Image (tube, rainbow, N blue to C red; front, side, top):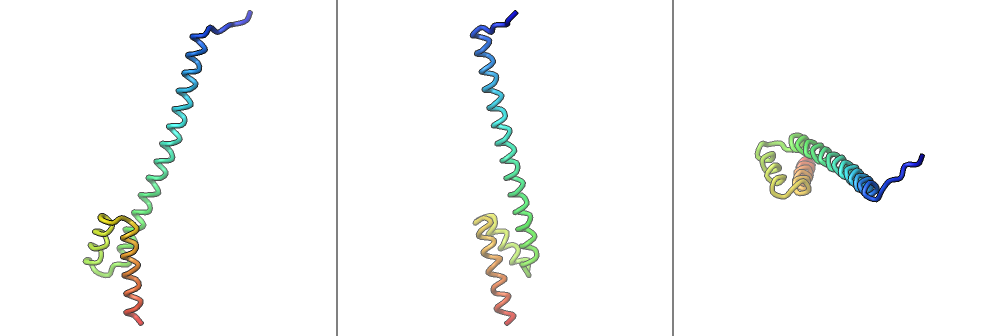
Amino acid sequence: MALALDKPTKSKESTLTKALREIHQLQSKIQELEQQHQNYIQSQQDLINDIAEICISSIQEVQALRILVCKGEAGCRRYLRSLLVKRRLASK
């Protein structure tokens, strides 16, 4: 005895298959975004540690944090590099 699927059943199956594929794609995208978020959090934590290590005064720390908020990570890292360069030049 052979089972024959009528058109509505085939249509439902293909709709379900399509929905499952889309769910898997969304889950993959969510995992990718979660990983990017974790990487961002880690880079921000590293930057905060760098600020604490490089800045000698609380005024420098406040300035670094202000730059971080206003100009972003790249601007803050430029500021920290400039502090290191000034420190090296002063020590010569």
